[in-house]
Image (cartoon, rainbow, N blue to C red):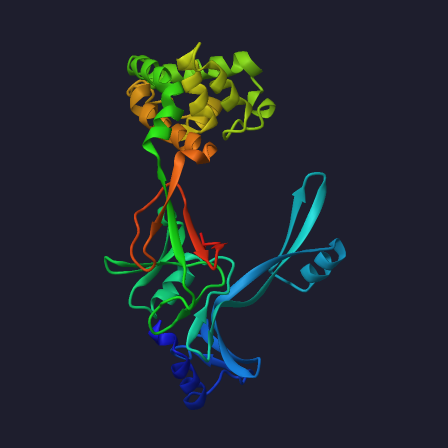
Length: 338
């Protein structure tokens, strides 16, 4: 973040005019771009600079009388909508979008709760590398070339000249223990084998119709309300699938596809979608590998003992990982931006 060096920002305050109406507001680049600026303020007897990128909007509930008064004044930032059996009145209030603070020790502190694409892109413009999000590396990261990669956690402070964190940190990733994984999935071996053979001889349309028959038989036509939407591993549909994997593996497979919504299968069953081309593909082509991968991942998440923790070298690019990344500072786990 060489462009955010403390000395450069201090120089701007001494050589460029501030924005009209605020003697502590200065442009980051061209003054005509009023969305990108910094605010000079005092903190513990020192001058610090808050980097601002556009505005943020906060949602505030107001009373009906306040809503009607603002509506009469022509306020465009109010909304009235129905919430259950009553009306809810909301006003959206804009404020400075402070995305970080530069301090006299030439450090930058990440101060937001979340960074969106535009904010990451803006900060990347001041870096040699770039800031992005990578779900398989825990969330927000700084990447430079093939080797350098630094995870970005909430409240993190970095040296703007080097992008190095101001405190030592450790990176751990989870690897699947093959032996424990095999033991965990042994229960599902027959289920996968039978389902794979049966689905190769079943069209997509038949799979959808069969799934609808199974779920209607279990919970009736109003199954979505009865099952609470049916999504996820905690729902009734998933638990019914678990019960059937030995006695009725194909039924269990289709129920898993509904509960985990494999390739929008839930919506195909619930709303009769994707039926026009349903005869053209086999159910195996659409569902089998997707469900197997998804179900295995869900099973791993439910059994933490299947993982072994591996330490990576801080500052170096670490392998992508589906099973979780942990950042530790002084023995405490940090919350990485997502």
